[in-house]
Amino acid sequence: MHIRKIPENVFSAMNFNDEFNYLWNPQISSSILGLGYSYYFEFIEYFAERINRIYSELILDKDLASDNDIFMKQEWQHALAHKPLNEFIASISPPGKEKYHGNVYDFMYINYKLYYEPILHDILSNDLITLDNISLKRGIKDVAIFESKTCVSSFVFFEQLFDGGNIKRILSLSNNLGILYLLAYHFVEEMEHSYVALDLYEELYHEKLWDISLVESEITNQSIENNQAVQYGLYAAKLLGVNVSVRDIECSSYYKFTVERQKYFINENFHPRLPSVSKIREYYINQWDNIWEPMVLDAINTKVATGR
Ligand SMILES: [Fe+2]
Ligand SMILES: [Fe+2]
Image 1 (cartoon, rainbow, N blue to C red):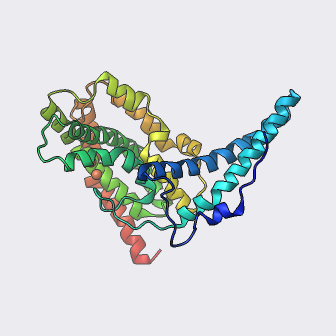
Image 2: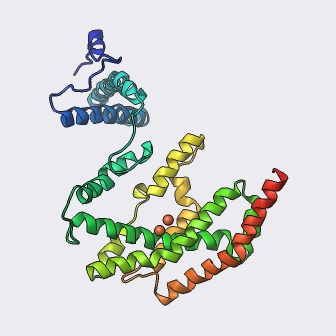
Image 3: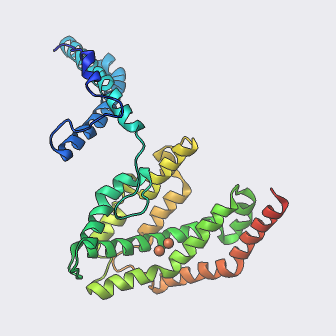
């Protein structure tokens, strides 16, 4: 093994200017995949090197230690070699609109492309669509899953922030009553209409939404890595300059209780119309309409009037 050096002209040939052409390969998709590797390589190689700094001291075998040394030097060089290309592409601002959705925020793009776009493409490019269409069923099911989970997330929101006299404390501690109102108003309507999405699914497909396997995949084995609210929240934190880790979110009372309550409520045959679930929905909706919303609005109006 030895450490090679890339001749300078290789970088000149990449043409980092208006004439840049990403088609290093005659095929578009293979060219794009190559660029994906370029980003993947750069980060994972720094990552390997960062870990190496800890374990390299612990290697007892001399030959292995010296091989590891060259291995890491090669990796470090690779990361450096990819950086100019990766930084150049990262600096290009994207031209705009997605085909099936007016405006996908940049940080939602990967989920959109991997998950939502194929469904939308299949549904919207198909003239004769029937209920048998797998993408249509997937889409209707996804909405019903979202509605079920959000219904329970709403319980946690009101339980933790408003119920049992908590509202007074939250109103005095909140630094943005507008966001508090927005989320509360939205969660109320989510609880209110959540049953419709399940009725729809069950009416159209003549089967219960929540069977054992769905409960397992969506609830029992849900992972924080796939939680879109967590993913987008982390990015919002980056934009706001807030240093928060996944572990911090995982330990937050809102996240912990949401997962716990979802596990408690969403079992086989879950439906927001189940009497035990309906009772809670109605309670929170009434509380919001009659007591909590006026209180939040009152606090907002006072704040606006006093300019504080
Ligand atoms: Fe909504
Ligand atoms: Fe909804």
